[in-house]
Image (cartoon, rainbow, N blue to C red):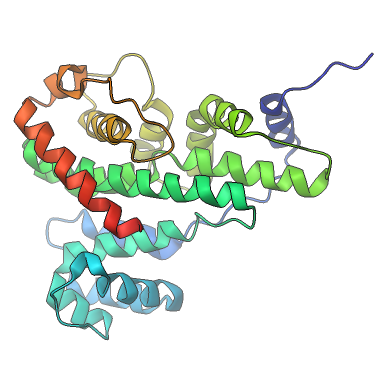
Length: 279
């Protein structure tokens, strides 16, 4: 009698066999990130990077003219967007636009999950950057944004693997509970592995791997920023889970970053506003 294999085990076996079609990371996004973390990013470099990627540039212009930036004059070129919004803001829009391409699916149920994952990722990115500035780690703002945006990429990867498995086996059926179990069990480890295959710098890979550990390295402030933003999003239900009972101000991360209840109340207001970007 054959042993019944769980969905998690099925995914792990599929990964080990090496049959996976890996998602492609936008190289332009990585170059944008490298420019953003410089002390003095160059406008010409950023404009050239974004303008050189047709898909990315069109998405950046669409987002720059979205309701999130309402009240601003319409921009028609990347250079105009940089002049109007600033290098940092256009850089962040570029990263969001590049990441959004990963959140696509032909499966209706998966699309709904990916939309919530997308909301969560943007919320964590904006939240982690805000926390870096508020807690006195201005030099980590760019890194915190990128780390927050991609910390849960493992969940996306797990969903993509399940889609590939469904194409190979029409009899494979999944429920919301099974999908949640698979993502929860595998996303940290598989996110770390995927980001390494993308040649993303190790500090970001570590955030993807360690953002759910029970304890935190007291020297890794980048990880603390993303973990705190992640928890704040979860208390508000920005994503696929909601834990309103979690008191973020009493967490180890809040103490480590020396943040007050007032600080975190302001963070919640910011996070609610990020929903506009993913509407």
